[in-house]
Image (cartoon, rainbow over all chains, first blue to last red; front, side, top):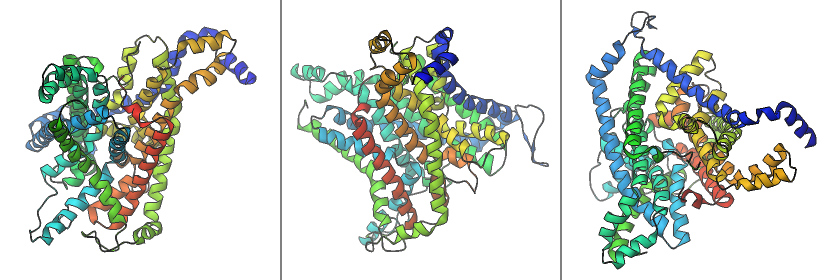
Length: 300
Length: 266
């Protein structure tokens, strides 16, 4: 240990102590730098068009990709489908997540709390592909639901590869995120406040509306923001449960890179998606304050 | 709980719906993996372990699983020291431009995953290293790094700065102070963070899909590619590996730090 201390004192003279926190942050800054570098490369690629005769990217810069992305019917359809989908998914997810988080936080039984936590973390830790695969088994044309319906004489229903199936899968994927964002906000609401409202004659619906919901607003906004951005930009669920007919923006981007091999167009769509996401986050921060998503805490 | 019966009924109705939604795919995959039939049917055709035998024979799945383990290990090994240092720096020191650092370090969360993935695909592609596993590990580390930093800052705020001063005034040199006072105090955060990093990396699908080629696919990508052709129970059996890993991580989290830490208000 003494040798180590000596070594540390040698490479770490007292004069450097002021810089210490910055040096501690440096590796993380460099690591995230890979991401920033990637954004610049996307920006560069978005300004080049694909020459369909040589299949090379143009040497010069042009805004042609952006014009195409904003005018072509196909892209606006995909964008509309993703945006509307994200809005519906967020609404349903919050409605389902709120009672879950509430019960988890308020229950007296620690066994029930643990059960709810485990039921939440298990799918959270399993990954989208495996979960989507589970839904294929349940909802597929020869899946469990249709087999069961067949036993009572109902002809098979087409439950997969449509818009509701994708939204359903997304809600399931988003639930753990939403509950985990809501739970701390609900923990912060003193149970005494609800008891007080009750003793003053408010029934539980009014208590919920006038006490719990307003106080939980930061949590609801944070959860809503996370759910809306994650579902807007999701790839796996639309790909697997939509079967190629219900593409979201991320699927269109993937196809531009790997099917049409049009890097420029793919990069343009990516950039537009990043912009929409940032505007959403920025809007929420402006409207409701920046504390909403600051996971790295502002205890200072 | 305050409130009457009607409140319990309404809340439990929602919770029951959520529970069914959350658990149905896991339970069904578990059940399907033990089926004796060839196709996945309901009601099942009897129990057998034959699909577990089948996946042991499939070199493709086995290799993909090993690759996923390697990627998750690389990701965790990089994330732990880097995230711990950054987390302690943000929680403990008065950093100028702390707000800007926080926003910058949250970029992996605010930039959509497909954007991060495509960007890093271009970066690593230009470097000519696509096809190896370490870029996938680094990419998984970058996109989930905020989890690691968050976990460490959350537990570092419990660290009483007087403890470090006391150690220093008793003559403990810097390093000793760090290893015997600071590090043990943030250990719950490091454990939580590293478990999260490992589990998220082993499950990471989209970034793996973008950064791997046919010879370097990880397990989630392999499963995704097989789903497209035909549904057979061997995929259910290999998926159970993920369920087992997830269950192990939850037990570890609960034993080491307690799942309740996710409920605390900040």
